[in-house]
Image (cartoon, rainbow, N blue to C red):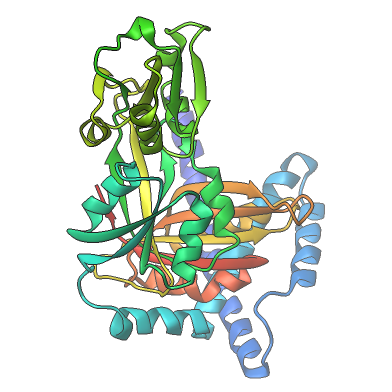
Length: 384
């Protein structure tokens, strides 16, 4: 039995050796095509030729292998285009802008003092994130995420700090949607450990609580705890966890509580009634620091981009195949429908790659060729 398996493996090895030889031969020919296209000003992508070639190889394949053959050649096309584009070595405007930001337009150290825009009121988790990012930040508070973006665009604040995702409740969809509307760059990110506490006025116990205020994300993170309180306790969504604490502190009622941070208990003179009310002890929120201008600081090893892809089979696959081909690790992928375009989606990517790597340079030079539209959101490091 073992001898039969060994014979199969020997046969596979023989075939693989031939595949490698033929693959390299194919890539050398693709390189010749790239040189011809460069000399004659032709684009790398010939969509008509690819469709015809894909149909041809699938027609030549046995029916049971046709779909596998199609997948194989789709990847081969991506590898070929990537190799050709690397040979052409065209520096686009974005690559030039990034290079200038790294070498000329950005200080070597992330600033420790600046005016920052945050959503909420004093005591919000965004403020806690600010304190982690900056040692001496002036903070302007706004009641919506949209106004934070606008404050950056109008120059009222140099930076804005916004929540982007939570380890338990998922992405902050409103922020993703606003990314489509506003011009900004991510300069840094930070992960904050989130412990939601139930805050009340002095002398109030749990049996006396009839209504709880908090932000929708915090309420989602504490669903298990809230379920233990029974159906008679009303849950009310407000703009921010810190605002919830402020509302309880300023209310004449003694039957209200807030799911908020321990910091807010001290700041608003409230009592901690229940510690760590969130469902998961490993509860983190990731915040991004945004700027109107592109700033890239030493150590930047994450890149965020947004792409708009057509609603057709293989659109996302082609992007993922290109990332795989270049050797870039994808650490987050989020999709959001575009209200103004039927059946089309915006895809948000977080990529793990040094801003100084060859893979990063190659990606930046190819972005406009692997998507219908794209936006570069910045390269940065993350504090943990």
